[in-house]
Image 1 (cartoon, helix red, strand yellow):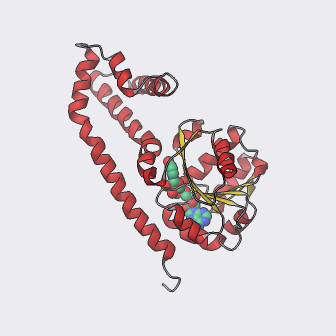
Image 2 (cartoon, helix red, strand yellow):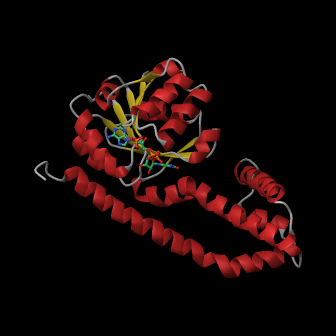
Image 3 (spheres, helix red, strand yellow):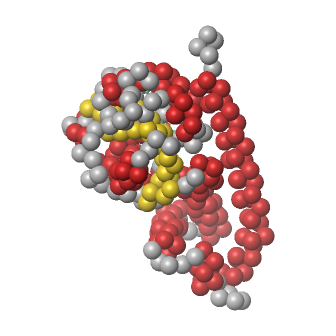
Amino acid sequence: MRVGFIGTGSMGSILIEAFIRSGALNPEQIIATNRTLTKVERLAQSYPGLQAAPSNKQTAAESDLLFLCVKPMEFKAVIDEIESVVSSQQTVVSITSPVMIRHLEELLPCKIAKIIPSITNYVLSGATLCIYGDRMLPEDEDLLENLLSHISAPIRVSEQYTRISSDLSSCGPAFLAFFVEKFVEAAVQTTGISEAEATQLASEMTLGTGKLLTTGGFSPAELQKRVAVPGGITAEALLIMEKELCGVFYDLIRTTHAKYEEDVEKVEARLFRTKVD
Ligand SMILES: NC(=O)c1ccc[n+]([C@@H]2O[C@H](COP(=O)([O-])OP(=O)(O)OC[C@H]3O[C@@H](n4cnc5c(N)ncnc54)[C@H](OP(=O)(O)O)[C@@H]3O)[C@@H](O)[C@H]2O)c1
């Protein structure tokens, strides 16, 4: 199987590197391109055998499975270039939430999937969300999920829940990192502990908590209950978080969803704008 990547920026290169490091793909199976070619040429130097292609068209023509790793507003240009060379046997995978599967199906004759990766896939961890178009056969879905399982936990979601699922799995690392940063900042300023030590402690704690919530068999509520004995120090502190933080998540979700709706509209307008303008 030949796997193509159009766009080797942050997420495209994370996916390529994770697939190679996990053993899911050999560099020889990968063909990739990027608007600024030096970026993909650097990847080809790091992973001998990986083919840096000079154009989107060549990458699309030579791939069985093609990942589109460009930003939403860049999809139109890429689709215009590749539409004449993709066929019904190929699968095109978008990695961005505001590009709708039905729109890609309207514009391209191939099988369409959407996956939402996460920066956590860089360390072969976290989820990838999988959403499938009607042309995908069960064996196409299995093949894609088998590939993704080397770098993540593939989780099927309905397109209706793409945004909220992405908030949790894909934006989540930034939100959690913000929490850690602010916790460390307060620890340093209040007590004088060194930033390095506080960061190490908070990061190890984050890793361990993730394990408890995934393989450790704890739900978030059970974990809090186990740590926060009634009348103890953690319980007192949790009351503050309960009072100060709960509303934040509603605001956060309102904000991500409003921006998403805006992006969906802009992308749709860009994709279906007549070629006259
Ligand atoms: N970052 C994340 O954590 C994350 C997580 C999940 C999903 N995503 C999705 O992944 C997508 C890409 O995000 P990113 O963070 O990787 O952005 P990025 O770093 O800006 O990468 C986009 C890449 O696409 C290239 N590109 C743009 N137009 C192109 C074209 N017409 N032909 C070929 N290559 C083209 C750009 O090339 P240049 O070098 O010329 O600019 C750039 O290298 C976004 O839609 C985002 O929503 C990101």
